Amino acid sequence: MSTEQLALAEEFQQAYARPCAGIWAAPGRVNLIGEHTDYNGGFVLPFALPQTSRVAAALRTDRMVHVRSLLNGETAEFSLDGLVPGAVEGWAAYAAGMLWSLEQAGHLLPGLDLLIDSEVPIGAGLSSSAALECSVGLAAAELAGVELPAVALAQLAQHAENDFVGMPCGIMDQMASVAARAEHALLLDTRSMRIEHVPFRLEQDGLALLVIDSQAEHRLVDGEYAARRAQCEAGARELGLESLRELNDDGVAPEELTARLPDPVTLRRVRHVLTENTRVLAAKEALSTGSYAQLGETLSASHASQRDDFEITVEETDTLVETLMSPHQSHGAQPALGARQVGGGFGGCVIALIHTESFDGLLGAVQENARQHGFTEPTGFLAQPSAGARRLS
Ligand code: GAF
Image 1 (cartoon, rainbow, N blue to C red):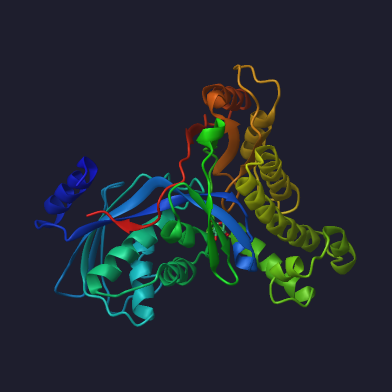
Image 2 (image 1 turned 90 degrees about the horizontal axis):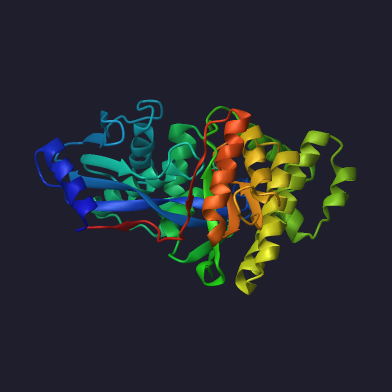
């Protein structure tokens, strides 16, 4: 056991006056590209972060669940009997929802004592909620003797988030958390659920992927995400399609949409999804062939499409992207090769493909720029594509 795992096991012992049966972990993710395509049957290309949600767990002999978080010191208690959406709220709803979802799928669970810790930044668009759901799901399934393939676990976690928490997300975050591989990005076709692990090692070329938390408030359960999803679904209906993905299958050019979608908002939303799916496949190709200039351009084009067509960026993230791409760096750094906002939108993180030696200079430049604009100072780190959910001990 690592020092961190020992510390979590000791905390469990203190909280519940008995040892835990094991520790499970599930990572947060960065989406390299493919935003708001997952609920449109499209493509996404995320990778897992080294930062995980970890849960120490042990079975109980009743049907009660006690879940404690080391992040805020709070404990929630509920019974699995009569557990319904709305019965548990706040952070604990993600854990309760996962257990509810497992039971809904016919997997009868015993009671559980759970202790949760996490390094995944919360509310930054790095999927702290999917990491929590998947770590709890993995722990509960294993302790209850339920064998679940990764895709089934991800789908149950999505069901928890959609129908217990009330966030109509797609499947990307949960799939990235359970199925990612170290040093690879995960190309996922969300319609067929086919996955391909794409080698993603930038160091050998002197490049790195910078993640910058804009610190701009990022809230997804407040209606904008659901509104975008509804607009996409309405667009598909208007075009007589089951999902907007079919536009890519049919080789429709973005310009052809203008005549078919008279409402300008619907036109912009649909155009984003169509062009973003094309960009995911282009990014995968660029990654596979080491064409980093092209990869960078594709990332920046994704940001522009999120800003102009999907309208989910905010001033803080637009400014971050502009600063990262600016050739006039005052900190002796080369501009990024490409940059874009990641995740559901309306704040959160920006990623940038950068020359590794420019890390300090670029971070300094965006921090100085944020101060000038009166924004909260952003923080940043270099992301390492890491392994998916697993048992640690
Ligand atoms: C959030 C959702 F949870 C994902 O399913 C996905 O739609 C993403 O926003 C946007 O690409 O992370």
